[in-house]
Image 1 (cartoon, helix red, strand yellow):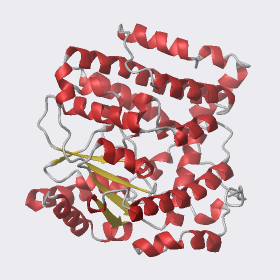
Image 2 (image 1 turned 90 degrees about the vertical axis):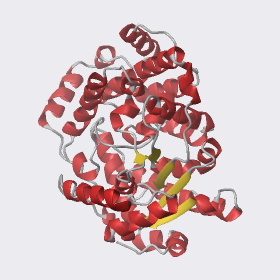
Image 3 (image 1 turned 45 degrees about the horizontal axis):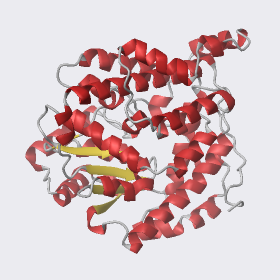
Image 4 (image 1 turned 120 degrees about the horizontal axis):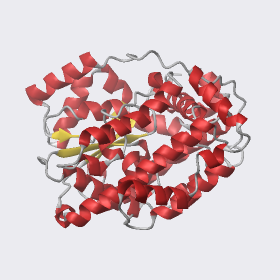
Length: 421
């Protein structure tokens, strides 16, 4: 185990940051520690400000406090945040806490929302950077399907009938744009917009138990807590927020996505017994290089101290552990094998229409002429590398290619995954 977790030698170069970022962070350094009082990150202040901003008081289930307190502790002691990093985290937490208050207010006013039925949802998952985002958006073009939009997951109460949706969307867009503009290369790695679909991490964010924070910040104690946490309560919140987003609208089949679902399939199926899960598969070494670069760049937007080698070490261990764990669960019969479908990345990008058509047939939601037209229009509007090419190389990780290939041999053989590096 210790050998597997050894930190590799790396040669990662951070992507350029916008000039205004360095100027802002230099201002933070000149404050000589006063940035902490300028941008407070303590729970009492955050909770009081959320109450004042909304005029509401009920945060709902207090389970969220454990994650909030751990996250804030790591933010001060471990994350080495720049002034921009503090501002970004402060904005994320303020929006999350205010959203919790508004969600509880809507449920209190309309208790019938809890009767909404979430029927046979579709979950796209897989190791990170294996085509989950692409497949998610493509499946959303099937007429009977619906995926949640990013701003709706960030502020679900702002999306209910009668709410000021434009204001909610604008606020979420501002938060996302600040991050993207700070490191422009992030757009080449993963396009992130308030008006596009995204991962369920924003729904889990309402419980302050989300990969939003483990990905963007160096928060080791919070990360270990996340790894040990019983996620059934988080999936109950996930379902509750889908009920809220579905309320008052035409019922369509939800299509959802997050690589993090792969580590929580038992909890997912316990919460959604009629769910269908699609698992994407790609060369894990190609995915690893891409993921490490993305995570390091996200942290670089918030801190001047990014331990790329530690990120690589954790990811290389985690990939193998997760892939083997899922194979064990499936082989043991612990998961409903007839409701899990495997899709290779090479097939998806090689013939998207055929692949999505076959998936639609498996789901009982045929693509049809309308869906085919939507898919073709989507692909024409959103070509690959439209924001530039994501530049990364496996050699940057400092890992031994032959050794890593051997570690993933069982996974690649099982799913017939071709090597890309």
